[in-house]
Image 1 (cartoon, rainbow, N blue to C red):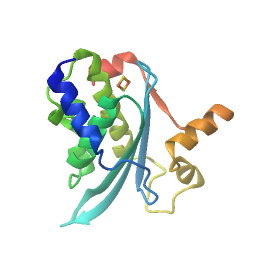
Image 2 (cartoon, rainbow, N blue to C red):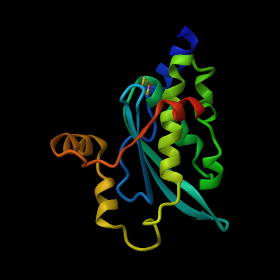
Image 3 (cartoon, rainbow, N blue to C red):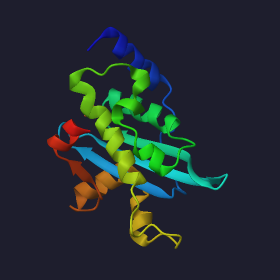
Image 4 (cartoon, helix red, strand yellow):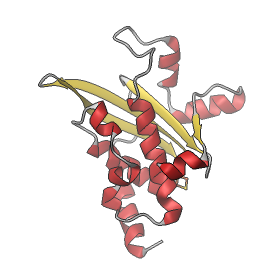
Length: 170
Ligand code: FES
């Protein structure tokens, strides 16, 4: 890993932005990496802006490496003001562009961010204007709580594990 890349990661995680769960989120996405076992959850809140539905706030929690945290921090800033469709077109590399060129061993870290974001951005049948369901409210809990609960009783967390092929393509 180059010194320059490491310094950019360290700068980004010194003061990570938008870290933590969001109680009033409109949408949530959670993924895990089959590569390293790390997990990331993204919360999104939308607002109307000139007739467009754009991302007002985005936050994340991570059980992941420094690169994933740095990339998520940068990505949450970058997607603000974009529509879901616009944000959906952004690759992990674009979301973490400020980190500079990624070492090959760290590409999957930005894929984790991209895929958690895509999971949150994707329209879900149960996400309508109706009040959130009990399942949705449960999945809006803290990632650590879900992980702990999942360990206690298997199947407690909604987690999409990416296979290595999908991470390489991302
Ligand atoms: Fe797993 Fe970076 S090493 S996300």
